[in-house]
Length: 95
Image (cartoon, rainbow, N blue to C red; front, side):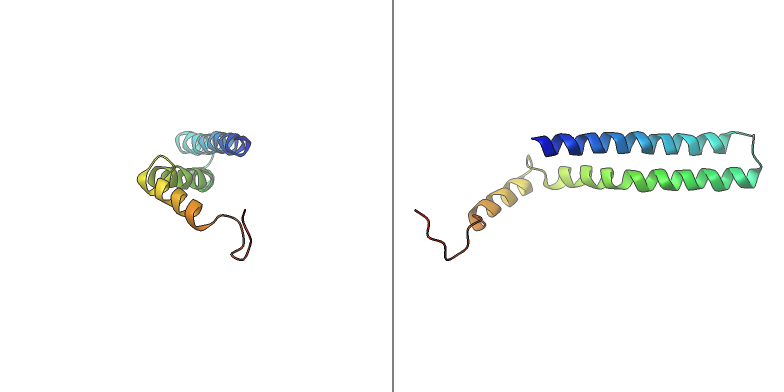
């Protein structure tokens, strides 16, 4: 169970950083303290960083929905791995 908790913590912290980057980017787009060109450059850079940081979490969530253990596809994958990959070599004697 420990690796799942570590993955959840990583996704949570990644999401927090992503939200911060997107919020800063939007704030710069809406703010008026910098020159227009500097605002656009900085804002789109932060939005791009936020999108790139969010991408692994999005892909992970989509893959869990498509082939997670609670889906039919995920159950088939688990059964196939149990049936065909016992972890023992083919010539091993099992008692």
